[in-house]
Length: 114
Image 1: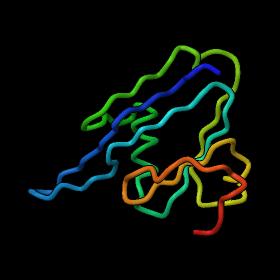
Image 2: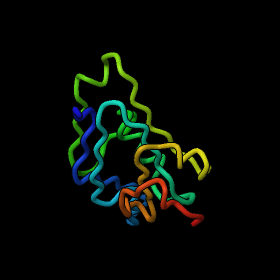
Image 3: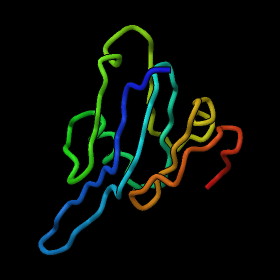
Image 4: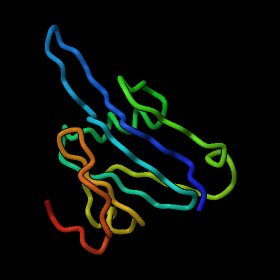
């Protein structure tokens, strides 16, 4: 399968005065053509920060993001962010975020309540 999105070492830091708030910490993420990917995690885990960077609405503090031309061609790739485990279980891959880090990619058959 062809890669359409690849992120390496994505880190997003927000500053409040002298305080640094890490929304993403060294995230590696890849999506291939035709995948249905779900991103899950509790509030404040970094889901929105990740999608803002992947959607080019925000820039990472560190790391690289590569969006491949295949993204604009026919063939649907879908990434969702949800708290709904039933919907997440329909994905090919599920990435769990917690405290700004991807904990891993899971086989959807193994997803349980968190």
